[in-house]
Image (cartoon, rainbow, N blue to C red; front, side, top):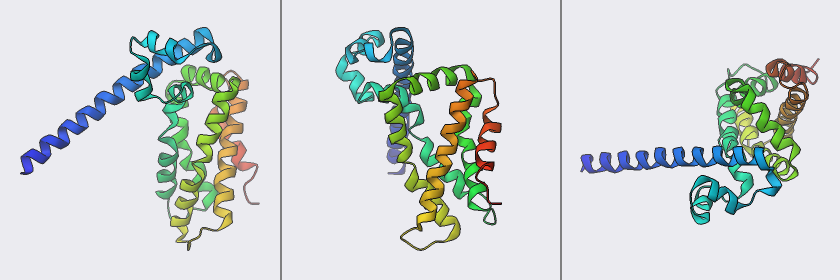
Length: 202
């Protein structure tokens, strides 16, 4: 019985890995096409044709053009929340949020050129920018919950936890705006530090 379960789990993991690989490949095709043609000019049919798949196949992996670009950020909210939750118990919330956001910076530090190009595409495309802000807004409860768990706060969570989470994400976005405006020349970590320092308790 155990062997059958192990085999089933193994097959499931293999399918997940294969799906992730196809998803990443489709996302790369979409990204390249958007850069060449412009986001607004490219249709779902164009994306499917460029990837060599049917429209329905493309839509099984991404429900919209926006998702084909922004899927790279899907897991970040939970990852940042986990990082905040794992910070030392005696660390203040603001410092924990700052260090937790280092997870979100990994994408920008690993491949700065690509990250800069993607950030520009998102910032310069109203539909992408709006969807990205919507995604980040969805991070608020996870971050607020992480802060609440660190403080063993009762439910419902204090308003302050949600405010801190929202402001921390604003700091991230402002740092990214300055980094993008500098063509990536400024240090993103330093910019985020400065943004947090501007609101640090005196």
